[in-house]
Length: 363
Image (cartoon, rainbow, N blue to C red; front, top):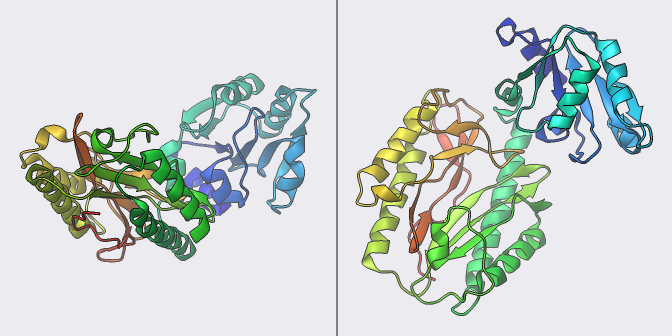
């Protein structure tokens, strides 16, 4: 996997001499090791002119060695502090070069330690460049996502049978999380959203323990499973007992936008054009004022990762990418409706990995 980063370093247009990775999806993708961002800095530096250097807290050294990743390890103890380890690393790597960092992951104290260790270093936010190593999913990655989708869909099927008038969002959420693990998830992809009635109008709302769902409420589920480090991300919206005409019409608009998004997704279309096709359906409806977000995002080891499906992003879809198509409409203090699918871009079209029915369902 390290070859992916070396190719990016050797691409002159990137103007980089090295990358610094901290624990997270890119670190795991390259080394195979799952570590966590904690108070102890743990940094892996990949250089085009030197063997990889790993600055490792002593309590993680054995775990890192077990990865059989060929790197020069500089360990440090809590009592000694970490700055001397950074100083040693950059004595090896030298000065006066450009270092690409993960701008969405690296913290200020890690960056400051690097700058203190090497006064001549130039730091560049290389998030977009580094993210390229995970844009195109290999077969085993797709299979992990597919399994995560299957687990989520089985869980959803079980959970909607648990839903009934008088239950709270928290009760349903707890049931869903338990089912995810029972069905076979290694973990939850993110904290699930179970939002009913007016609470569903909050895109990223929090489940309540003091509201009992009632007939006519819409119930929005947004959740996923994690399998071997890969995630699913699915949203479906249901109605309890009945649905009025306005809400049905609103649902139909979101359904149509989702269908168009899946229909046009294929290699060669830009994220801008994909989002534009979806948004035009929403904008042409009587519910235009309830649009609050873009069409979707990449999916893999992160729940939200490149590429982002939005206007003004002119990157092209390519075979092997996995994205979400998730149009939504949100009427404040009333309800929110979202339908989200996980979509694999194939050689000439796409495959929706999620197959759970999108038709309006009254439970």
